[in-house]
Amino acid sequence: MKWRWIVPAFALAALVAVPWLGDEVLIQFGISALLIAVLAQSWNILGGFTGYVSFGNSVFYGLGAYGTAIAMAQWHQSFWLGLVLGAAVAVALAALLGWPILRLRGPYFAIVTLGLSAAMSALIANLDIAGKNIGLILPLTRNDTMFYELSLGLLAAATLTVAWIARSRFGMGLIAIREDEDAAATIGVDATRYKLAALMLAAFFTALAGGIHAYWITFIDPAGSFDTTLDVRMVIMTMFGGPGTVFGPVIGAFILSAIYEILANGISTAAALFFAVVIMLAVIFMPKGLMDLGGGFRSLGWRYFLANMRRYRL
Amino acid sequence: MLLAQILVDGVLLGGLYGLMALGMALVWGVLNIVNLAHGAFIMLGGYLVYFLFAAGLDPLASLPLAMLAMFAFGYVIQRGLLNLIVRSALLNTLLFTFGLDVVLTFLAQLLFSADYRTINPSYAGANFTVAHVTIPVGRLVAFAIAIVLAMLLYLLLRHSRLGRAIRATAQNLDAARLYGVDPGKIYAVTFGLGAALAAAAGGLYGIVAQITPYIGATLTAKSFVIAIIGGLENPLSIIAAGVVIGLAEAITALYLGPTYTDVIGFGLLVLILVVRPARSLKLA
Image 1: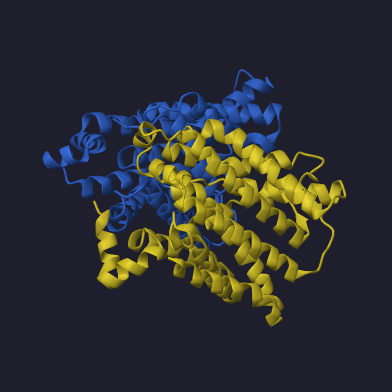
Image 2: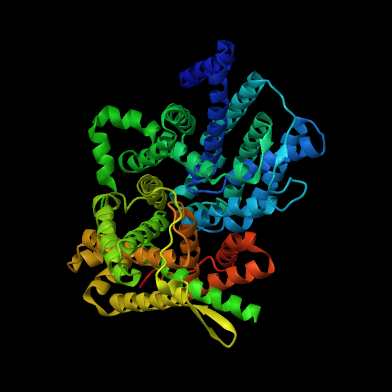
């Protein structure tokens, strides 16, 4: 029923209002958290629904950032045109790369995506128009509220898209691929085409997030834009929140970003360690993520975690 | 002559690459776990040999000690933790071993500092010349040990009771169980063997290159590419795949420049996966 949308609607309204609190640190943290949530949500479209794990989505993020930066810094075009350019390049690359590599099943796909960012980073570092190793500087715009609302709008759009996917025929096809790809093929799901569409959607939202981030921080270079730790973070946040759910990746991203931020203020090395320990524990004790915790924990209590632990034991 | 020299260097280094991949391929083939902490195991093995060397022990003598220690470490990790999740989706073990990699790297940085360490016994810098080609003794030793260990692994898997149990578990877990194999133990022993091979690779890596807490990730990636090209089936073909990558890197560095050496292995991998995606990956 409609009540399922009341909580998210109130949450969205509250998030929209955050800049009026006037806390600059909070707004800046909000922008980062919203953008990483977009990445997690985009990863969820392919990874969560089809079970095809990509460790290379940061390549789309980097392309979105570079598309925007090249349009603004080199060609003196508007930010919006840059966003469109970055997204177009990323979606084109997703189509071009996805066609051969999405035919690879399970682990092979994951493996191939692992090297994508490193390869693209090396390529960009040799391109004149992309500023080679030095990077590009974008025109400065000091308007954090604008970036915040833009990021929030993007996250809302990505989440609405996932909500639509979850109840559409397209989404059913994606889930069928996750459960049994051969069986899905026999009932008429064109698996490669479905996966390709999912990857292109993911590339689109990821690239837009990259473009916004580039304009916000006003400086990009290959190492920072094609950052493989981003891949790891989006996967961990989605897994922690609940892969294949509508709100899981967003909740996972918000919670982990907040804890990370608090830890990074104290001891910076502890923050990276924290992510590692969270994911190790989550894999053992709650492999279906936070969204599954609600029902499972209510019926089983703390034994829910033990039941999860026993499920996959040798 | 330059080309001949580059080729010799590439082949010798490639043998060591093959040894790095050996443990990862063994664990992957038998347990279906892609161990992303494998490079960190190599790093830990390197540090063990380094500290034994600093205490006055020749690296070749301390190599077996480091292997034994890492075997015990691997055994405990698999028995206590990885056996809990070994039957779940590959992504779960992938994420878990990734977490392990971060933790081990963090601990190494805390305990050993980020300084560069090199294991340099007298023969590490020595070399001799054959037909105008200089052969570095350190790399030659590493190459020879890699081949010996691959042969030993082959013999162990083919001709021992333990090897048969490992292969049986890899082929069919339930059937192996019916024949009296304790899979929990066999998995732990196999993972321990993988860690021991990583330790050997780490010790030799310390002789030909430098050890820092951060070498793990690159070495994992390299091992990974080699394991796939080698095919997880035969230890010696993995050494051969290591030589292929060693050569490819050397040639790339010569003609395209050293920035592309890390990309070439990955490029080869993509090519192979796209051309031959149906390749079976079982160690049996």
